[in-house]
Length: 542
Image (tube, rainbow, N blue to C red):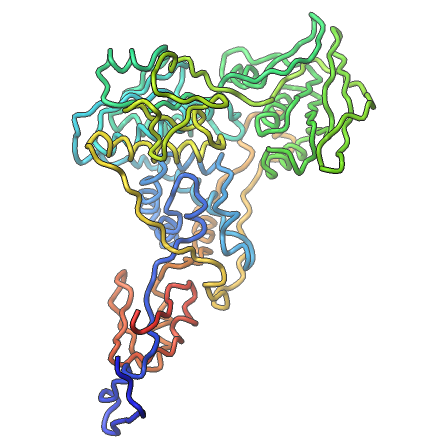
C-alpha cells in the first residue's frame, strides 16, 4: 500500500478520516493450540468442552469431550492428567482441575442416561478388534461411529482389560467402568467374551473381516530370579490384582512385601492393606526420583501407611518367609550399586511387580511383521507390516497408560476407516501453541484450584470404597470457569472496547469480531490487551 508523505485529516467528520492508510501492521484473529489440548494423549479438545461446561451446558460439554474419548468417567479417575501439568493457569496460581471436571461430566452422563448418537452411515465393512481394554474399546467406539460393523474378541470373562484387572476398585469402581463399556456396546458393537484369538489371519478369514485392530493388553507378569525355598509364597502382581475380581480373594497374610516401583506395585501394596495386612512394604532398587509410579499415587500410598524401602534389592527368600535385602548406593553417575550391607524382612507373601509383557502368539506365522523388544512395530498410521492388520495400546512401542491406549484406539480407527475407503487419513495441521507469554494474565483474578474430597484414613485402610471423590455441580462449574481460554477468543469484548478507532465490529454471540480496515491504523492495542492471546499483529503486506 502506498503511504502518504504526510498525514492529512478531514475536519468535517471522523468517518471521513480513513486512518487505515497509515497502517504498517494489521491485527489478525487467530486460534492457537491450548497447551492442555496439546498435552492430552487421547487428543481431547479440552478447551472446547470446558467452554460448554463453564456455561452450564454439561451435556454439550460431554458430547464434545466424547468426540475423542468415549470413557470420561473412567478417565476422570485414572488418567494421570498431563493436561494439568501443561496448563498455563499453573503459572498464574494453580492449574485448572481438568481431570475433576471431566469426571463430573462422565458421572453426569451415567446418572442422566446420556447416550451416543447412532452412526449416520453404514459402510458395509466389518472390523475385528482383539482385546476389550482401553485401546480396543476406544477403537470399537470410533469405528462404530464411522459406520463400520465391529466385533470385539476378548479372551477374558469381562470387558475392561487392565482397567478391570489392573486398577483396583478403590480407584475405579466397577459400576462406572461397566456403564461406560455398555454405552459403547449400545452403538451396535458385538462383544464376544472368553474368545481368545489363537491366530489372527485364520480368525479374520473365518469371520470374513475386512480389517483388524490388535489391542492385546500386557497381562503376562515379568519374573526375576529370586532364590526361594519350596514353602515360600511368591506371587506376581497381576495374579493378585486379577484375583481381586474373583469370588475368592487372594490370601496374602499379615506381612506383605512388594518388589517393584511402578503404579502396579503401589496398587498391590494398597490392596494388601485393605485385605488386612498390618505391614505392606515396597522394596525398590532406585530412589524415589527414579520411581516410575506417579507422584500423587506415591503420596496416597504413604498416607495409607505403606512403607517404601528405597535403594534396596531382594537377594533371596527362605521357607519361613525371611527375605534377605541388600542396600544399594548411587555411584558417581547416579546408578545404584550393591553395598554388601544386608538386612532381613519377615513376610507372609512376596509379590513381584516388575512389569508386564504382551502375549504375541496370535501373530505367529504372520508374514511381514516386525517384532522388537516384545512389541509390534507399526507405521505412523498404526498399521503393522501386514496390510489390514493394525495394532495399538500395550502391543506397540509406547508408554502403557489408559489415556495413551484410548488415544491409540482413536488414531487407529481413523486410519482403518481411511484404509477401508482406499484413502489416507490426514490429520488437521496443528496451530501454533498458546504459550503463557502470549496471554495477558492481568485480567484474571486469583482463584485457587478446587480440592477433591477424599475418604478418611480409617476407611481407606479397611474398605475398597473409592478414595478420591468427585466435585459437586457448584465446584465443577467454578473449576471449569477457571479456564483462561488460552489462544482462543471467548468474546470478552476487550478488543471492542479498547480500540481507539472503533474499528472492531461485533458480529453477535458466537460469531466473534472482525476488523474494519478502513479505520484500523494498526496501533496493536487490541493485541496487547487480548486476555487470551487470540490476536496477533502481522505486516500489512503479509
